[in-house]
Image (cartoon, rainbow, N blue to C red; front, side):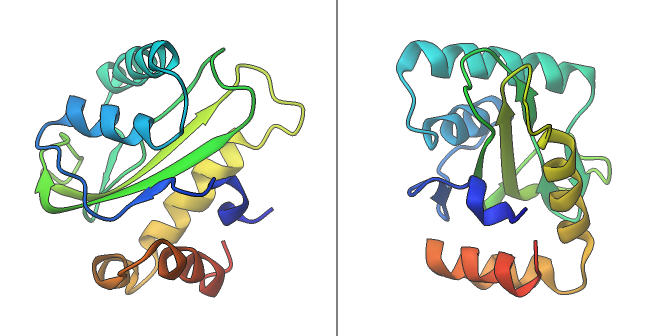
Length: 150
């Protein structure tokens, strides 16, 4: 299983404009290329998950995630905010890098938790934060994932 396989074309935005947690989640959901009603449902599910505890894992990284009936397969998106956003991360620092994971309630392949784990592990690797800051294209982002074998 390679993480890049879950990214559809256009699911990477290296210049997020949002300045609030809610707006970041909306902007990330918009990268999935789904209809407006489904985007609204996903946003509500993500917000519900965030209310349980922030998915900001520290080191400038957050992994908002949820399961929803509007997803027919596991999907991942990535966004970068140069300014950073208060995402109530565990280290109290602004978040610059966002990995969104959305999956259906039941997956035959059961990859939701393994994908979440891979992203968390990748995020902790030395130098990843600097590399995520310096990439300039979706292709460079996907190449970084390949380079780290995730």
